[in-house]
Length: 104
Image (cartoon, rainbow, N blue to C red; front, side):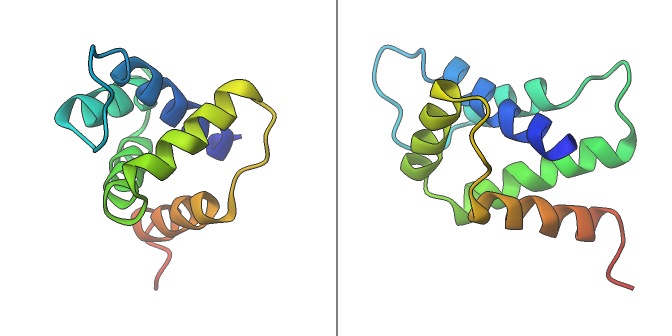
């Protein structure tokens, strides 16, 4: 459930950030701000959840080209039941392991 929530948040962040007059072709501060604002609920999310959101954005920013993320976003908007792509699941799993301190 948390993975689906994080995935839908990516979609929300990209949709909001893509409303600019010119097409966006790379990650921007606005993309990060929108992503984190959609991912983190300051009234209820734990510190772990906040760290997971931050970790996921940082990994997406480094590993997934913006154009690829935009394609994933478009696919998820078109079909909210779409199965997560393996590359995305791997990033989420890495963040859970890292931020949940499961590397011990």
